[in-house]
Image (tube, rainbow, N blue to C red; front, side, top):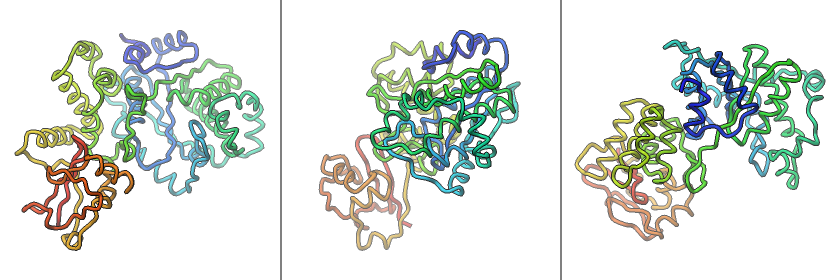
Length: 413
């Protein structure tokens, strides 16, 4: 299976592609520069982004050149796709900071040096060409090729018509389309990749390049990372699963993946790990305890590839410690407080919110009243409970358990 198109298809990535047979032939006969854009709306990539990064890794391993496009320009508008209202506008400083964070994370996951005979990946930031565009020149070159009537049929815009759509956001598709044109001109980029929710935006760029450059270029989307229940993978009650270990610890990421639905294990092994497809296919008949072993394998492989073997080993050891007892718990997420903080006591609901175990006090209240919280293995059902120094063990620690498998340790300093 030497053609990366076949690899991506067999592993379940591909959703739609323009001229798929042509594209498959192109990917099998020459090295193709391709790009994926990452709008800098936060200061860390998420597990959802990691699916896109896996696609880039497969492409690079098969000799194609990744262009990681940081959306320092497009983020100043914000993609209206999937939104019921306008995104909060970010300042230039915040966007630049977020783009720098993305760049540091991507630098650890893609090969930017061209090692192992791979085509070295390239960083670009569309702020470099979008922020100083001349409006009239841009509209004369690009805007004339876009039909407003047609744009309004796309879901990204159609779903917003009742509640209002600003002209500001209406320009997003033109900006993203211009990205493809610009990357074609400077890097001979022939392919744009992205999630299935980006199809209409990507078609705009694909058509623009074909019209202005009279050359064959392509777009391909891959399926969004969802669970068997139709929920976006990487979304929790407390928020996203971040690739930044200061926002989501390796242990928390490990536990999140370890607790996936039985129906999702094989699918996620194909999408989120680089294990050989033949090996994963051999696991398809696994049930019961063997299926739990696969969940552990999934969690370990993903954490290892994002954070390194040491962090993955630590997360696995911590998870086993919580069930077997007597092992090192140093890898369990923890928060440090001054002893004086608990002398007067801290309300349990506030503590759950403060440690990130609950997104709000109302969620914390629900967890407590539904028997979802234990302190040092003792269930707590009173939402008015106050935690004091008396609740801490002799080693000045306190363990909070949320549900069956989520733990957070409080340490006094």
